[in-house]
Length: 121
Picture (spheres, rainbow, N blue to C red):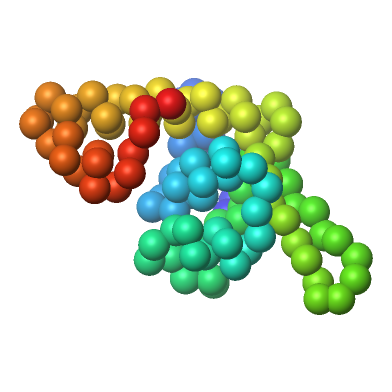
């Protein structure tokens, strides 16, 4: 994805880097540690491998995610958050998660949190 050249503030750039349905969810899953493509695909309900790879490549390009390949057969690749930008963005996502949890509680929908296995961090 190409970033815009004209913008009002840097927040627009970060928004463009992580916008969409899947990127924040991918980043949120990676908070648990390095993982394989197959495990990411299994853990994120509804995402296709094509979409996952596309978003991972963009997140790698923006330096939020690192890709590590291991030698040998079969080929093994792991994805993880990067030190710096990846973990800095995770801090913002934790705040967003907290806001979502508090909103659901205020709406009397704690059962949804239990249903999804959401544990406040």
